[in-house]
Length: 202
Image (cartoon, rainbow, N blue to C red; front, side, top):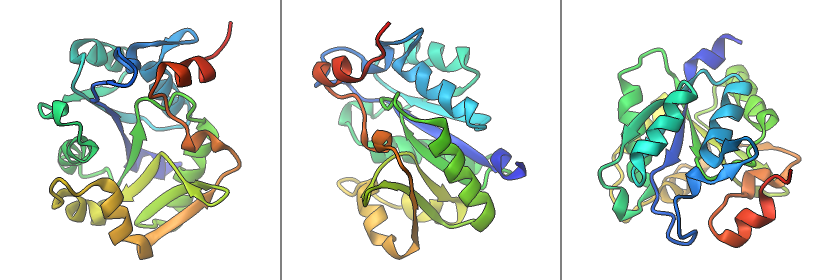
């Protein structure tokens, strides 16, 4: 689909992994790492341009990104733990890519991400060009979500303590929910217990 070339993924991977106790993006996930799995699924779903925003353990994060054919950006403010700052860094980079018309906001610690969900979002965007697309499972919204270029400026104007969640609340009238049949959109990996629960078994 032509529209897929107009969507770039921003993969947020700058966190300190305090609750995990070690860099969670680097943990094994089958034959890959947690971050590597996210990048693999995005590529399998047809997202050709993938940008990783790293911070903690940046050298290793960048290595995984480049091995997967993705770009990598360094969030120098990663220790502040604000996801908004990583999103804004990625959007500013994409502003210089005029063919990119939408950004898919992805979590680097969501290796449960499914290609079918990503494809559904891409197909919905290509068909309708909605300004905001958010997947939902049984009424609960999750990740990844898509923001079209006309709304980037509004997100870039936010300042902490405002968050991406604040932005979505402010623009609630423009959100189009995309119902999916998997709760994987609600899952990520924050603690050792969650990692043990969700990680693939040999």
